Every structure is written in structure tokens, then in C-alpha cells.
Image (cartoon, rainbow, N blue to C red; front, side, top):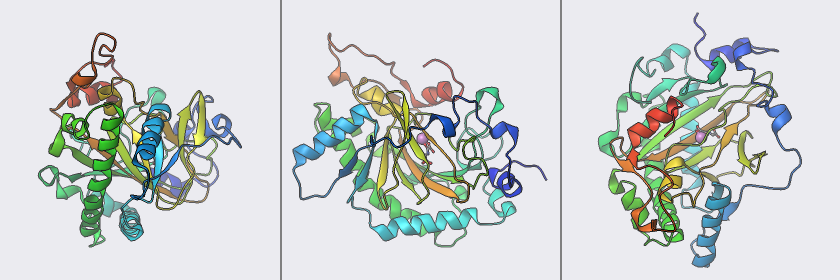
Length: 334
Ligand code: OGA
Ligand code: NI
């Protein structure tokens, strides 16, 4: 058997882990995580019946200083999230050969499909994680080949979640737009408007006998405008701030928002894309469901023209999203 999937590696690793999963010393979570620190990624209550000005300020501040925040009392019903989690978990519980039906085709230009690694890492190191990627919006961008047929409710459940996500995305774009001094609709419009692509990923982090030495996702910023993530109950996400790694506390039914590279670019650096990584657990499987909001690949993204003037010259290039992705994945300068 060729050990390609981390799920297979994990089932055979009882005490030690293969060398390629052992991080360098300056990355190992056991020695680089801040312990017992009170600082926390902001939690923002987005209930409708509250002071709008205050809410806006909280979102803007978190996007400037952390690039990450958790949202509670949003409009997605708890059972919709629970179902999304249940069907994704069932997919990863299928026998390996049934999951391989959805494997990302070798040489494919798209990230869609079941797979193990996205970026080549320096030194040939690997993250302790498998994933499934597929687009969930717009309908014209969806390739159902990559949507699991088992469990049978997978499709309906994901469609329902997508429907609710639109509302959350709209509100975030509006707040971020107002926070830049633009009109509420201007940021989303400049981000592709109705052509915005929603790309779902399921991360599957099997138990790992040496969680002190391995990482799930290595430190990175997301390429998206922003990312809306649902985790399961197993702790693991960490955010980097002022030189330290902090655990992002698991809150049931919260959505974790990551400011991504494209919003940092559009805001000309006012908002910061967050450096983050994930740790793994000794006994439990961690699963997460990020949705990356991205422009279509041919779409050009740059600092919003209305923000630029003599005192605020562009700090980033305007370029096609596909070119941005190519440079990032191949570790080339942007
Ligand atoms: C990612 C990511 C975090 C998590 O997939 O880009 O950062 O909590 N995931 O799994
Ligand atoms: Ni990420």
C-alpha cells in the first residue's frame, strides 16, 4: 500500500510519527505556543438589536489588529452547522478506496478534490492533515463530481449551509467597506460582486501520537478575501499576534473569520490577513470547514481606487487572482 493519505499514516502510527511530519524546532507547537496567556482573538456578538456603530467598530478593530475574530449569535441555525459537520465527518469515515473516487486529478489546475497537500513545503515536511475541496457557489462554478454522493444528504445539507452563508458574507463585506470609509456596497462590488466564488474545504486532522512535534496546517495566511470557518469541538486553531502563537478558543457554533490576503490588498494594508496554523490532538480527530471567499481566477484585485491618494499610495500591485495564487503557491514574490 502506498501511504499517501495522513489518515492511513495515522492508523499505523501508535507511538512515533514518520520523520517528515516532525517540524523544525522553531515550529514545534509544544515549545512555541504561549501558555496560560489571557490574550484572546476577539469574539463579536452580531445580534441584530444592538448599537450598529459599536458593532462596526468591533469588526474593524479586530480586522486591523488580529485579522481574525469569532462571530456569535449569527443567523446560521445551530442544526444547519451540526448537519454540515455530520455529513463531512461521514465522508471521511468512508473506506479509503471510496474516498479516492473524489481524488484531485493529477496535474489538475484546480484545487478541487480529495487530497493531501496544497503547497510544497521547504525541506519536504508534511502537515498532519487530509482535505476535500469543492466550490459551493456560484452554481455556474460548481463541479458536482467533487461533491460526495455518500451520505446521500451531503448535497442538500451543503446547499442549505451555503444559503445561510450568503447573509453572513454580505454583512461582513458591508462592515469592512464602511470601515474603510466606502459605501456599504463598494467593497463587495470591487471584489467581483455576484461572481464571488465560495470554495469549501474540509480539513481532516487524524489523532497524532506526537502533537508536540507535528502541525496540521503550517503557518500561513489565506489567499481569499476572507474565510468563514466552522471547527469541530477539538481545540487546534492558533493565531499569530505580536510575535506569539495563541490558541483560538473553541466556542460552540461560533464562526471563525479570517481576514485573507485579498482584503488586505483591497484595503491597502488597513486590514491585516492573519497568520495562523493548526495543532493536532493525541486522541481525537479534529475537523474544520473553512469557506474561502475568492474572486474568479481572471478577476483583477488591487487597492481600492477610492482609498488612494498622495498620502496613501498603493502598497500592493493590482493583479489577476490566478497570478496571485501562482506566485503564492510557488513561493515567488508578488
Ligand atoms: C486552512 C486553515 C484552519 C483550521 O484550511 O486554511 O487555516 O482550523 N484551517 O483547520
Ligand atoms: Ni487558513
